[in-house]
Amino acid sequence: MARQGMAMALLVVGLAAGCWESANAAAMLSQLKPTLAVTASPTPNQVLHGGEDVITVTWSLNATAGTDAEYKKVKVSLCYAPVSQKGREWRKTHDDLKKDKTCQFKVTEQAYAATGTVEYRVALDIPTATYFVRAYALDASGTQVAYGQTLPGATFDVISITGVTTSIKVAAGVFSTFSIASLAFFFFIEKRKKNN
Ligand SMILES: *[C@@H]1O[C@H](CO)[C@@H](O)[C@H](O)[C@H]1NC(C)=O
Image (cartoon, rainbow, N blue to C red; front, side, top):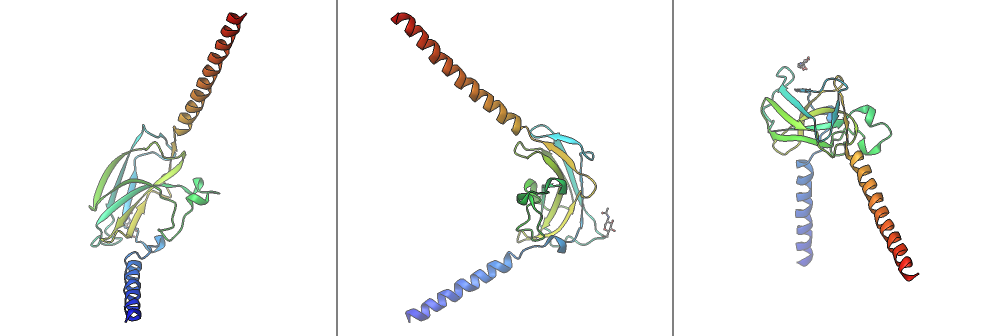
């Protein structure tokens, strides 16, 4: 009896896992329809600064490429351009979108509309690199079913100020260590004078 119960439990777990698998079926980029026409405001090779510059991204359904009946959401991301992926495993493109590392920075995720515009201020944590913009259409389960992107034409560069901030921190650290050291030094000198 206990054994049967155990077998039953395993079966249920197995079925649940199976459903989970199929509900989260991996989307392959090569199998998505390129139905979204995407533009981004930066001119080709424009240089943007994190925390300052704002870009405008638009998308619209290209109805000759497919219908949007199952689209529920649009997710827009900044993606590493091929030139910034070379030799960097952690930015590598995988056709399986669960493994893909190309588009790591979310610009927006919102309810689907056949056309849309979003203004986005380049976030401070965007690494210095060359980027393009990609938009995915997601179905009710959150799986990518279509996309559009600014490649191959328009890429732009982001210069992160994080590097600057780090060197300022280092400088501040050096100076405060130096000032504590000099304070200790003068304290020592004063004490010596008094003792003499
Ligand atoms: C719309 O899709 C068609 C068919 O895929 C394609 O030939 C055309 O270039 C696309 N238009 C735009 C504006 O992307």
